[in-house]
Amino acid sequence: MATLDEIKTYAIEHHVPIMQDAGISFICDYIKEHKIKKVLEIGSAIGYSAINFALVSEDVLVTTLERDVNMYEEACKNIHLMHLDERIQILNVDAKEAQISGEYDLLFIDAAKSQYRFFFEKYAPLVSLDGVIITDNLSFHGMVKNPNLTNNRNTRQLVNKIRLYIEFLKNNPDFDTTFYALGDGISVSKRKPKN
Ligand code: SAH
Ligand code: MG
Image 1 (cartoon, helix red, strand yellow):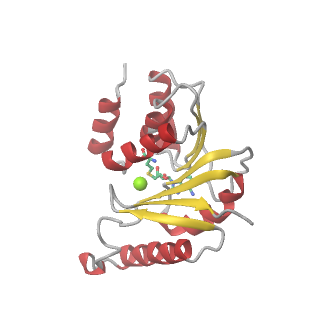
Image 2 (cartoon, protein in one colour):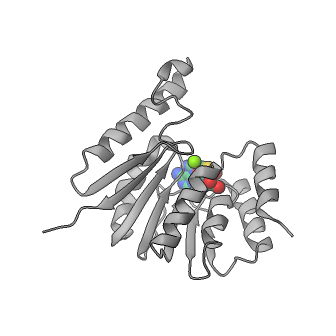
């Protein structure tokens, strides 16, 4: 039987960028505290975070999107081994084009960093009024704060995109965002109350 530790070891050995422990436990606590029932995740990789979310409580249902077929297949295997097929629906789709419906209490964005704003705008309408949008990797290994950590042009462009996304969140008229310096940097965006 697969265990979370085995999935994590696999991720480390195969360089799969799963969420860091601090980030995972932050979101799991959030799910528990706010009695989150429906989660939509963008970027499943091998299912590690989705499995962690589903294990918080038997009421939690996760829909998760993954475009890479190898990741998708590994995730399916792990979800099955953890006996979570009934509560985690994984779709092998590109989240840029996917047609997803339903209402979610939590949208978790953890896919291509250059597309964060696009994902936020595309999927925010599926988030319930008192729901929340959480984004991972906003510090991007410390490079968002300190761009001199890399000379790689593509990495710098990515870091710049993340910076623009942070500005977008800060200036968003519809959402209030709090930033947390844990894991690789997480934001929690809540809809502003309308009056
Ligand atoms: N949430 C996972 C880690 C996700 S890593 C965990 O913590 O366990 C990011 C994943 O997003 C990669 O597997 C990548 O293939 C996927 N991804 C990137 N862009 C995507 C897109 N446009 N649509 C769907 N998946 C995407
Ligand atoms: Mg991540």
